[in-house]
Image 1 (cartoon, rainbow, N blue to C red):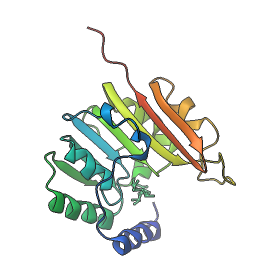
Image 2 (spheres, rainbow, N blue to C red):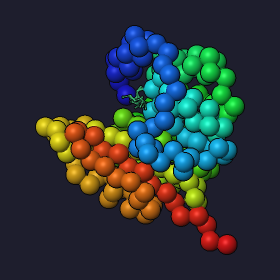
Image 3 (cartoon, protein in one colour):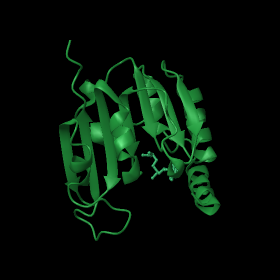
Image 4 (spheres, rainbow, N blue to C red):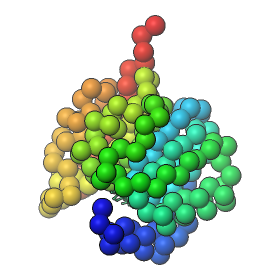
Length: 184
Ligand SMILES: C[S@@+](CC[C@H](N)C(=O)[O-])C[C@H]1O[C@@H](n2cnc3c(N)ncnc32)[C@H](O)[C@@H]1O
């Protein structure tokens, strides 16, 4: 990512300041599926609203973003909320690849950050029985543009997982998917 893009995200996050914990959009209506222990990964976590929410459920979270200001706001939110789960904040540029090598996660979230090159790594990061919650801007119900997913992009990309819910409308696409539990 170019330096000025990072500065733009920093300025945006700084202007918005500390947020509030929020579940990921793709999990709306399915919160009962979220485990209360285990590991979660939040890719492009912004100001940490989802990461802190997941930690509030009891999950230990790795939260990755390129913006130091976003990560700092996440840290402040975690300090204020004192969630039971731990959060590791990782500053990394996802344009350089997937920075998280340490195994698989019970919940993987990627929200409002569309990076098709990372879709295989996101799928591979979902543990057996784990959930993927992903949301991107979509051409469906919008004028389109190079940052938006075409119709069916998420379903095609994550076809190896079981689709729990998929929704494309009003310029957004949400997918909730699960990797089947390992057979014993
Ligand atoms: C629209 S925000 C979404 C933040 C959060 N996921 C949410 O739903 O509130 C997009 C985030 O992606 C981050 N981002 C953009 N490009 C990135 C990159 N190349 N590597 C890591 N993070 C990036 C930005 O810093 C920003 O926090």
